[in-house]
Length: 259
Image (cartoon, rainbow, N blue to C red):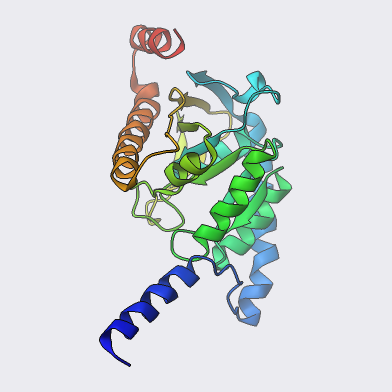
């Protein structure tokens, strides 16, 4: 095969992998682990979730203020706060992009039991097909959501999926982060995953809707991706430092975010 033919074949392979949502071959031991892990994780979430006390800064269509008559949106947040976020936004039918690997197979069981639906795919495999499913669900009035640096990092580096989906559908992106006053941080995980301690306070910081024009070219998309990264860092920093602020500092932040 000539060099041009090899390059074309490599390009085709890269494109096809982003439409490949077939489940991987798992060992018998892995298949046995999936329901056990899912049951254990779900039990922990349902035990700790009801004890959390949430405060919301900024945003709209969130929690008790949710209105199903409002347009659907694209939500994006860092993987670190997925425990608290999954509990807070439960039972609203949002569609989440979910990896097809081993971890994705037990997490799918967990999040679907908490009232979500899933679109299979990730940034490395099946992502384009997953985005197509999410676009269809958005048109049906269902919210879509991404753990924006998942499924395996790098930590706090945003993937472009939400910007691509927002351009395609014309929907706004809602960027948020959940900060916890007291939590167990899993130091050996790539995302520094947090598990809230019982009865802890939590703050959900939501940025104003992030808009992406549908006529953007590639350069415009890259600019929007960079802007999204900055906003995600901003809401993370506010949420992560919230409980170290004085009462007066928190009052000023509340006025700024909710005003």
